Image (cartoon, rainbow, N blue to C red; front, side, top):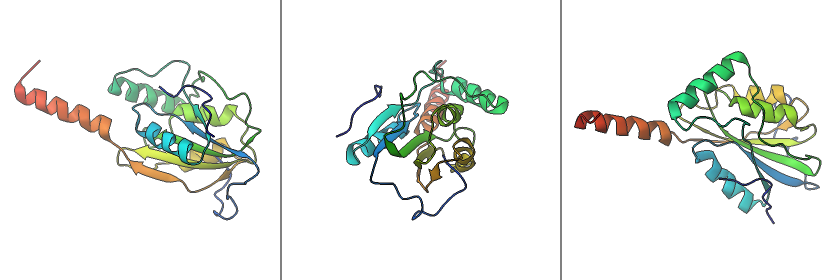
Length: 183
């Protein structure tokens, strides 16, 4: 049965799937960072189907509601190599054998808060299975980020899906308003 750890509102050099197959002697965790909800939908489905515990990764200081302000903050954090503090951490990862790690691609990489999550939690010996949403540019260097920030974990091939709705919605509404000449 899936339990909710927090309200819902990576590994060494890549190994083969056979070597990194999830162990059956531990529970699964779905850890998720989602700004607009695209990645959260996948996380909800995983936690129900597996079943798995669900943990929302959130920065201590929330990202702005404005999409473009968030993009700029994330770019600055990425460029500085920031690891923003987390709002909450898992008390322990000891009971988990497998971590399904979900996040959107920001600026062709994993969001800085994912780097923090990987750094502050002991994922040595765990299997990490990423699931990623992106706006059309693919995974970027996110696999390398997972591998370098959780070097003692087993990293499996994951799932990725294009989910560019937020940017497209903003652009389409802006075009529509521009055509109406509404200011």
